[in-house]
Length: 176
Image (cartoon, rainbow, N blue to C red):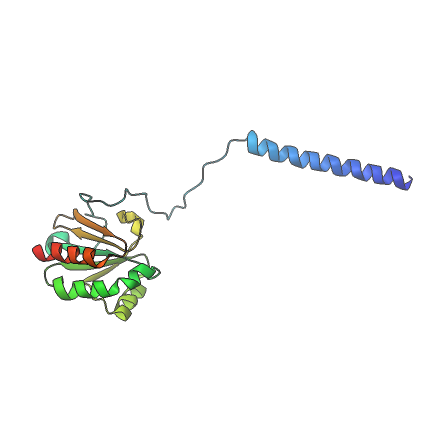
């Protein structure tokens, strides 16, 4: 076989190989139905965003809403810089209204890590809970929820609060 014949045969085989590969890709993309993405079994169920009137009863094991009376839920994360920037306000909340409302910190991190974070920041709360924030309908941190004795959310504040918003929170909590 001469060199030009070998080159022609190799080129023909390469063309056929590319055609087969391209055909397989086109068939997979256009003719085979796409499978729906699978949710890992450990993923929490989707919950509607928490709003006034939402019930947290049964969502935070170990929190006794009726015994607490009014409960302030701090949904925060050790990875959130807005949460860290809000810690002076959380300390102020504990000092000014910690006697009239229970405070529960809810974080996605392990409880021991969350407790150390709060200790390092000087934030004292009545309980620390580890939970995926999406399971209680929290979409972003920081979020503060005021919950009544029935486990129903009565107020929601999201994001890093401005000074006037902080005063509004304190006013609502002091009214009782």
